[in-house]
Length: 346
Image 1 (cartoon, helix red, strand yellow):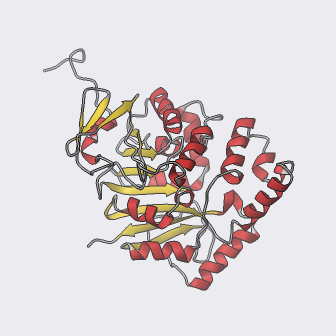
Image 2: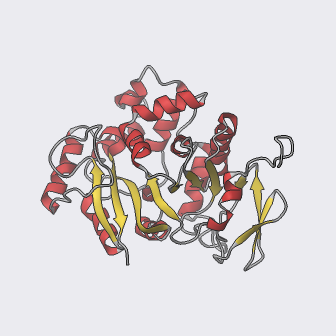
Image 3: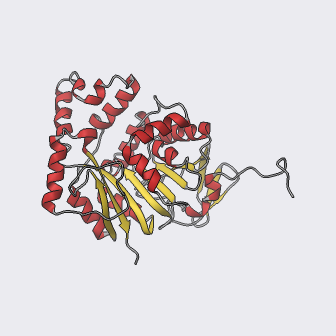
């Protein structure tokens, strides 16, 4: 019988999940090449591991990367990581912040035991780290920006969050196998790509049959308030930035305000989408509608909502009315809305 002194250290999430990863160029299996690299069994490419972060990013078009939207957005977030960790210094403070947000708390409570989760476009990884605190779960965060991932992984390492891990990848060329995850979430990401629908199709293939996908997009109607403020800020050289409530929040320090302002008003590329459009994406790719935030069906969103149970998807008119209500309420939080669906069994 081995003693504590001779037992091998517990394996990292990456080591436990190597069979889920795939080469972002050819899709073949990956193997460890020493402690600091991965090697593809198919095309024999090697990928560096940066302090536990596999660098599996593959450009959309290696021959014409300059000027590509993916490259432009990647550069933007390398300089402006979002969100930042200015008010989070421990596992406890992250727990407290996440649980103040109703969606994150409900998601954490309702994800099935033993689920494999992927957050696509995780930024600095706050949601990934929060969900990874659960003992019986595997949670990966992926992003194309190594700077953001280093912030995420640094927090994970300091707080010893064993069930979270991070991977650098391009969502158009995923570094995971098809149908590898029980839940894929991408909140506030696809509208910053050149082809949001193509991005959706790409990451939807990573969801297992009967698995869940969660997508958050800027709403076409609700975001008109943000568009108007952006125009005013540009015309006044940002002198009217106080018109955004986040910029007046006394609990935010300067770095947090800057991160929000740049993400909302200085971003180099964004698109906007209706509820009906996203619903069409779901249904065209074999997903059934479950729920949304804000809700389409009557009644407020409460702390007892069942995220993964079917709700009424409404009609084009009721979905439009939900979007008008978002506009009339001032386009809160940038008029981001979330839709949840389940992949049908074939």
